Each structure stands twice: as C-alpha cells, then as structure tokens.
Length: 400
Image 1: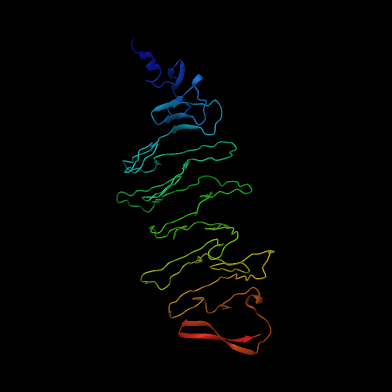
Image 2 (image 1 turned 135 degrees about the vertical axis):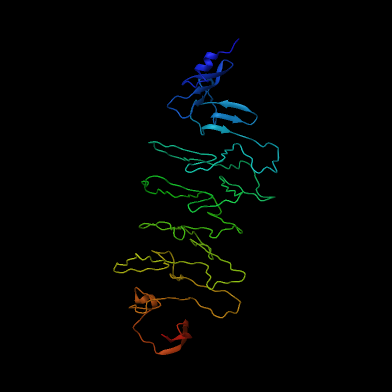
C-alpha cells in the first residue's frame, strides 16, 4: 500500500490549521497531534480526546515516567489536586550518582553565541498569566519543591546543600561588568502600577514563612565587601514620605535575656593588626543634602532614635527602664582610656545653644530647684582631648 501523500500535504507537511494525526490503541484514541490555528501560540498542539482521557489524580497534559512509558493527555475527567501541562519524573533507583555535578529530571539550556544588544535570554522561563479573576490559595510564576517524604539524613559526609530553589552564577572566564551592568544571584523585579492593599495585605519582595532556623544566614568565610547592602553610594534606595529602607518588627515572648528579645543584634569580632583609627560594631550616619530646609517650628535631626513604649503592665515594680542605651565593657586588658561615650562635633561655635543633652522636660535629667550643700565627691564628666586642651573635667557631686 502506497503512502498517502495527499494527507501529508493537507495535514502535517504544510501545517494546515485543524489537521490532526491520531494514534489508536485497542480501538481508542491514545493521543493526537493537532496543528494549531492562527489564534493559538505555536504551530502544533498535543491532545488526548474521547474514551482515552485519564481518570487518575496527578495526571498531566504530557506525562512521562521513568522507563519510557508515555501518556499524553489534554483534559481531566474531574478536578484533581494537581494538574500539569508537562510532568517529567525520574528516579535514581539504587544507583549512587557520585561524580555527577548536576542530575535532574529536566534541563533548559540556551547558548548566547553572539553579541545581544537588547533581549531577554533565559534557560527556563516560568510564566503565570492572570486575567480578570479572583485568585485564592497559592499562585506562582515558577515553583520549586523539595519534598522529604522519608527518614532522610543530610550532610553526614561531604558538604551538603539543599534548597527548594537554587541560583548559581558561574564565572568560568574573565567576565567584565560594564558601567551599566547588574549581576546578581537573584533579581526580583516588580513591573506595573502600584497595588491596591486590603486590610492585612502585604507586598514584600521577599516573604519568609515556616519553621526556618534563620531568616537570612551568611556563613563564615563568605567573601563580600558588604554582606547586605541597601542602595549604594551615589545610587541610594529611594524613600518617599513615611517609607524606610529597613524595617524590623519582632515579638519577644518570654525572652531569656542576653540577646533574646532583641529585634536586631549585632556582634563584631576584630582581630589582627588594626590600622584604622575608628572601628565600630555598628555605625549610623545621617547626611544632610544641600537642598535640606528645616523650616518646621521644631526640627530635630537625630542619628539614632531609641525609646520604650509601654501602656499598663502586669508587674513593673522591680523593672528599671533604660530608654537611651545600655553600654557595657567587659575586659581584663589594661587600656589607656575607658569611656562610655566619645563625642566629636565640628559644630558652629555661634550656635545659640550648645550642651551635651537636649531635654524636652527638666525631669529627663533629674533637674530640681533644690540646692544641695553636702558635697560627696566629684565625677569625671569628660576627657577633653582637642582644640589645645587635654585634661579630665570634673563636676562636684552633692547628696540629697
């Protein structure tokens, strides 16, 4: 029997719309290849119709399992927990894949072999298009799932890294980043209009939930000039109105002290030969631009704002509130000087008021109108070292 060339020309050879190639098994349509129409994406579609539709959960439009058994489908007899347009499963079985750098069920690879002036290139692209609908549950452009379904042990031998999603940037050659380049492990982009927020809604670039030991962890030995940077010198994070560059909110339930109960904790270890004159565990600066205009009746610029807010408390009779800061120094070394604060102000000597403290109320510094007459000693209030002075200044102390 000769080949039906008419069918080839009418169907698959010339990509005519709505032409179909069927495969039959036991009188049932197993799958069909159908040419796409002008209103569809791509030239061909894969579909299964008729009595051969799947009726089991988790089946997919194109379902391939290890062992080369193939099941192609387009529809479901009813709604199931998971539906996939393409489901590819692989099993390592009893084989130890030692020596293989990467093993997976699927790989997407694109080679950029020539200069690209303006395009987007990706090895794999996940897209979720959402129309005028009401979405509930979970929806993602791409989803990575790491499922521990047995009694698994991690990291007993060599280094072991596990993640729901992993991003690797591999610089095999001498790559140069030009003036306009941004190269990152993860690039999070939001394009479009500002969202309308309902009560309780949040819209973060990164949202962390679940039983994680840490929110973000940077291990010892990680090489970086700055571990976490928000904005850069000359290219700052833009804040408008009430926005802040970094906000941390924490609820401390029955804290144990030391670092427990802290919204943020910083610990710096300094070692080796120190060549810098000033070294800090934590630093904070406010830079006032030339365009700054403090026209408000009261305009206070503070490098740091600390405070305690408390309403009615269950028990506070034995509690001391320190709303400024607690400064500690624990050392067995012999040092030249020991101070609670170091002050350096290149201030305008014509300022109307100059003092160590600015007080909204006299009670803030324990001020009273009573004169004390019984002197009990003196207090070294400052070591003045500069402007032609180098001496310790004292104030006399009187008891009540």
